[in-house]
Length: 68
Image (cartoon, rainbow, N blue to C red):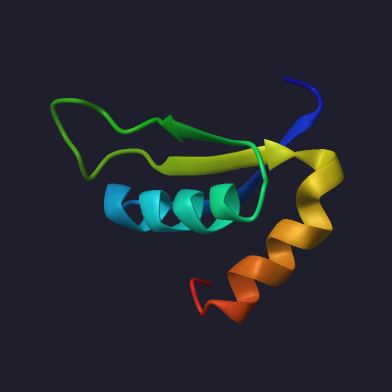
């Protein structure tokens, strides 16, 4: 996973899924990494990860959609 980077991090799964949908619909491969504790949902985060080569494109998409 050395060629992957976190482009978005949140505590809300639905926000991560919105960002994933935006990026996927623009041809960017996405992994959602849920690191929340299953017993205590408020502990941990959900990371949206992309390939480092897509970072500039993904950043522009996220900023233009006001998902920051």
